[in-house]
Length: 298
Image (cartoon, rainbow, N blue to C red; front, side, top):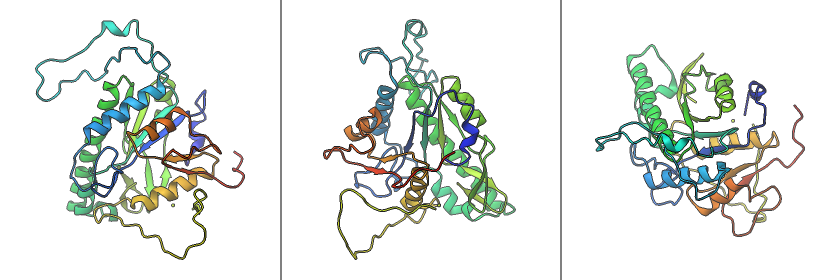
């Protein structure tokens, strides 16, 4: 990621960055946490499975160890708070250090941003300003629910918003990203959960691409068929085109990027480290983006 020098305070390198993405098509089989065609709807089953898989990937104790939830807030329909304080004294903590979770907005935020034109800029307009507020309310709501699910699975997760951390853009390009609080959270044993957010832009206001890529395996041979990618009208962040371009930029640093359907055995295998560079099993379904040349030296 850009401005990686700000992470130099870490005593150990980042072990894994997990990015949760979303499908824009209903029934496409690719939905992770939400479906963009269903306004502000969370796939509770998938979110629970993803949280469990992340917990297993981080766990340093036995699989049979009782999971103690960390979401002690009152939930709708419940009359009491549930908190097993005593169980934590003998609990073997999961190896959560140097783990980061990132998620987009899914069906949250995009509609508000699209309706108000936030992604086009113009904070001097009342509608845009109201849309900025509405967008942040929506995306932070999703972030809270994901943090709660991870916490319920025993993961010491903390939500961190780019806006609140002081991230800025200039004409939609990242201008500054202060990672100091992210570093401090990781060093303290927490799992930062960052999300797609609305941030201030020195030229616009906007909701926050150079690396070429090609398919290596399987080899489809030469083809003149064009590739068409459709982006939903309300998606203000560029859909999969932007995500692939950003993944290519990360791969140029020598960091492999794995794209795999969440809440499946394939995502579990990727998280466990089974899928390594140059040894991708034929029965694994997913995409690995890696740099074909020599990574740049830093």
